[in-house]
Amino acid sequence: MTRYEKWIAYSTIARKEITRFLRIWTQTLIPPVITSLLYYLIFGAFIGSQVSAIRGVTYMQFLVPGLVMMAVINNAYTNVSSSFFSSKFMKNYEEILVSPTPPWIIVAGYVTGGVARSVIVGLITLAIGLFFTHLSVYNITIIVAFILLTALLFSVAGLFNALFAKNFDDIGIIPIFVLTPLTYLGGVFYSIEALSPFWRTLSQFNPILYLINGFRYGFLGFSDVNVWISFGILIASTAIFTFTACYLFKRGYGLKS
Amino acid sequence: MATSAITLQNIKKIYATGVSALKGIYLDIPEGDCFALLGPNGAGKTTIIGIISGLVEKTEGEVHVFDLNIDEHPEEARACIGVVPQEFNFNIFENCIDIVVNQAGYYGIPRKKAFERTEWAFKELGLWEKRNVPSRTLSGGMKRRLLIARALVHDPKILILDEPTAGVDIELRRSMWEFIRSLINRGVTIILTTHYLEEAESLCKNVAIINKGEIVESGSMKSLLSRMKSEAFIIYTAKPLPEGVAKNLLPFDTVPVDSTTLEVNIREHESLHSFLRLLDLQEIEIVSMKNKTNRLEEIFVNLIAQNK
Image (cartoon, rainbow over all chains, first blue to last red; front, side):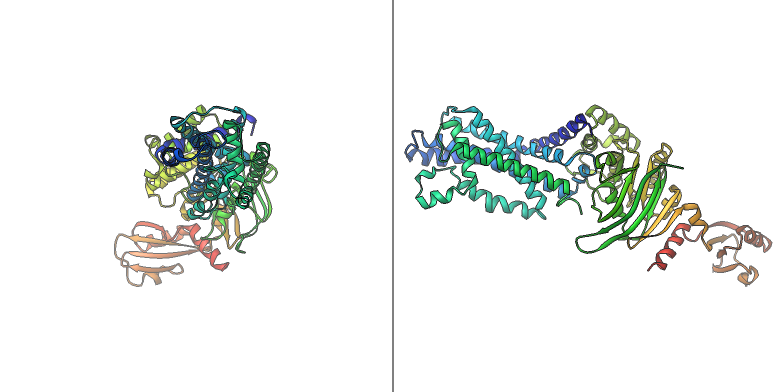
């Protein structure tokens, strides 16, 4: 395939994926909005009003970046895992496998769908947060880099899940038993500074802590962890996950018999 | 000598379960041919198609598509092939037109041209009116035609049809045969697997019969059919057959089925013409006659039985 033909193949998959989640917007875009609205009301407005300021910012200001990142992580992951597993279930992924589209283009196309949905949901979550509080931008480059790379990382992770999944139950296991606990314990709702030394140390083994704090740094200018370490972890994990996904696709893992 | 469209050399496939699906397959399919790949269920036909189209990893051997080794040039090889699978494998929530236009996109065809190609395929296959409905709402026959439209949208040189007329009514089946003939006339190489042996006999020039992962017979349809040791016919007569008709028709091997139906087995050294003349001499008037079974079917059944 020429470069132009590869571009057509990529844009076809990406368009198909974006059209898919926009077509079912009541299932893909509305629920995260309602969830984040409830979080803002309960944790931010009702409970948060009784919580003292964290490093000079209100609890609501502290909460908004965390909830945006949580929405990005969940939506990136579930979009790609459910979309690609549905393709496996209906066997329509074979349409692409019999074509000359290279494996890395297939990965890029599906991941673009996940990134697009998660960034849209993230921006909606941010916009709702701005109804409750104001946020200034400390470093726009950090904000854009963290949101895009996190969306990319969890889209690829969702693709892994779909590749390894044998049934629809397998699609739910990782988000429920791994992703949700790690996200909730990853500093969305609190600063690890407030934890005892044991829990603070334990929290530092949670990779999601670094992503949420890195993103929060872009708005508030402070973080529980070194932002450059966060950035390094994010780039390294994204690179490893992406290359592995391309390799697995090339080998036809979970796709070819 | 005709160029080879597809060459299989010593193709073996052992699945992860340990099942040996293919045990060293050699095939050479000339360009422009309509090639029938026949065999009972589980013989390995779909595995061969899967290996050629890139959906199944072979354990051993080489596949060449127009002299391109599919391991070394997978993209170029796949660009030459269109696949119509046995099962409906499209997204049931997508509209028919989107399924086919997207398929063109995977082959790097620009969107405008993809719509033009889709329109052509849909009109050829009688699907144009259904272009904007979700694929799940189509009837079984229309779903089969959608699979064919999708496989043809990138104008492949080779079309692989895995049971293309399964579950299709006779009228539609015959119209699909006509469509396949038009593709053959345009120079498209066709590989056909089917359980309707009449279909293979009617469309294909060459044939391979596969059983338990091995080719048990391969060659031209004509030479295969000429190997028949005998051919059975059913003859319907205008008036009741006379008493002792079988004796009167000797040396031909005949069996009266009922008062106006006669079965005859014409052996290799006998001629149907002589038998009809004998009937005429006996003043037995024929209303109609037909082959007892499809000729290819008889050979197929015998070959598979020998190979058991």
